[in-house]
Amino acid sequence: MKANYLKIMLGCFLGTLLFSCKNTPAPKPNILLLYMDDLRPQLGCYGQTQIQSPNIDKLAKEGIQFNSAYCNVAVCGASRASMLTGIRPTKNIFRDYKVFVQEDTPNVTTLPQLFKQNGYTTISNGKIYHHLDDRMSDWNEVWRPYAFDENPDGLAPTDWWQSLWCDYLLPKNRAIYKATNKGPAYEKAEVNDSDYIDGILTNKVINDLEELKNSKQPFFLTAGFISPHLPFNAPALHWNKYPRNTIKKPYNDFVAKNAPKASISSSAELHQYTGIPPIGKKVSDSTAISLIHGYYATVSYVDALVGKILAKLKATGLDKNTIIVLVSDHGYNLQEHAQWTKWTSHRTSTQIPLIISSPFIGKSGTTNALTELVDIYPTLTELCNLEVPKNQLEGKSLVPILNNTSLKGKSHIFINNSNAYTIKTPKYSYTEYINKKNNQTFARMLYDHEKDPDENENIAELATYSTIVDKLHNELHRSYRSNIYGN
Image (cartoon, rainbow, N blue to C red; front, side, top):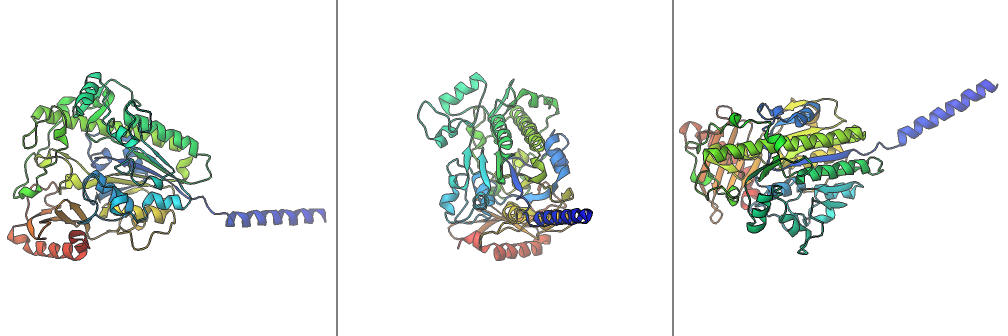
């Protein structure tokens, strides 16, 4: 009798426990956003063997790597605004690097805002929105190195940050910067990884993970790196990974054949640094090698910092419930087509690395599915089972592709740089340059990415491609009319 009673009680206990487990909601997934500035897919995992990026390569091996991911606009402020709202640029919004989301689209629900509304702790570390004081209410905490420190001039955090973010550590360069608000385009210093701004940022993210590991709230945690943005400042350790005699200029240091004048960048960004000739004059071969060397060094530097963050994520056990996204705001030109920096309609400006690693997806691999940055918002909300704002998002969730990397994805995506409007298909990139006053197309480019992946010859005016040009023109103006002409 007693034995039967014990069996009954044990059965009741197990049944209650089982019922309780079934009705206890699973913890919401965390998000870790590793947001890069000016990082093109020049990484080991993308087949660029000269670059040393072992930590990002490891992340790619553990997650899903997107080989055909593109920004929607190749300049930082506008690109970040577009990605974090899920809205493509138009004639009227997200035009350049100076964008404030709160001014261009004051009534939208941004990605971090949505997570915050759904009970997430949202932390903006480093450069997420371009401006420190843009949409601050989206976050539980906004932090950038030095920004909120006391300063001798009593400047607001945004202004103080703007005066420091170039972050030279060599006394000579610091003095030049302080006196002229300019400095060299690169710096090699015998310092530790933790001494530059991105190293300080990394320590903050690591500390956040330590504090968040016992939190009952899920988190949306960001690490917004400056590297590899100009100036190319990195500890000497990372410069030394690349002997100078191994650094080469790109073979296609020339304007693409038949490319219109409108396609040539007039960006002043590089020319604002000391030792760089004015706009219209070419940098010397020696300076070009030093700039490319500096870019490589900063990529390896940020890779080392990513490795430290991911190691901490694993050490805390948070990796078991955290979705990791590594992405860049746009690509970068390292003198391909005789151009530097970004904001061109060439692939070097627009193609980006994108890696998504989730413990809830039981596979890893690569995909060639065509992807654009506005797809990030709906992807993360679907992965976390959040309801999206109605009639706002223009991207498409990548979750089906994460679960089946063989899916083809989109037939085309949209990219806008100033008065250049691009439709990108898996095979072609077609761009029209449109006069803003009369809405007339005055130049165009077409590149066949299967035959000419480096875009060395514009074939838009060749008779053999007239049918393709007509088709892409019609698709561009049909699918993206409001983006081109405004509402």
